[in-house]
Image (tube, rainbow, N blue to C red; front, side):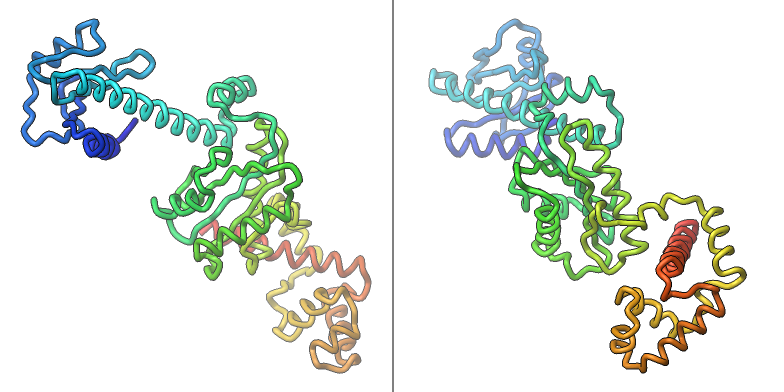
Length: 362
């Protein structure tokens, strides 16, 4: 519900406008916020007003007003004065506070709804019923973005992201863990993945996170229905993990660009070990010297083009051919043959995946 600090700020603003002293009390007579310096509460007066049927009452020179939430009494507002003007000002102030209750309630209800939606904690019928009550469009295009921070997020980082989006009610910014900020972005007609990519870079740049190698943004596929938002979230979460393994140099990772890495990420470790043993027997890519590894990477980078690879490595073509022949003798795979090159590339990715999973175990 509304914090006492928000109530205090509201009363001070109302006092500045109306030149009237206010006090907010809970149903048990405890003062939550006040602009009075010497107002003393008569518990009997408060209790009598709470138990009465009246919405407002003049008591000993003070105007008392009930502030309700769905017909449930939440606060007592006290205004200093016994004339008609004070009564009118008090009614306006009570109305303002009641609207605050509704706004805060809706805000946190929406946040709770979005969290449960992301985590698949809602039945299909509940999704659409609650969305209707919260005035959330069900049939619009959305995508989920996850901003993963280097350290545990604080209030300021969440507020910075919210301010970047300018408080647009159609976009939702929330969190379900300690290090990530989740953005459920609504897309206009014609907006696509290129726009999501630009937006992701803009967020990192605006927040000053673009130079931080430990900060990443990932986003899932664009979905057309509210019920599919959880799928986009799972895809963005996978993109973060797969990106760390195979695309560590990228700040922004799209689920749609994961390629074969997405398949490898879902393989069980025993199957990976069996595959590597079949390809490299008792060897491992870690056993290759630095020169061989650089040659392999550059060869793949240049799409198996011998001439271009030798040029970029500043070596003679025959030297490169010698290195590839040597690699073929030790592994049985000729990287100049497309099928062997694919097998070798997948094997290297599987090894990288296994190493990453080992770091998580510790």
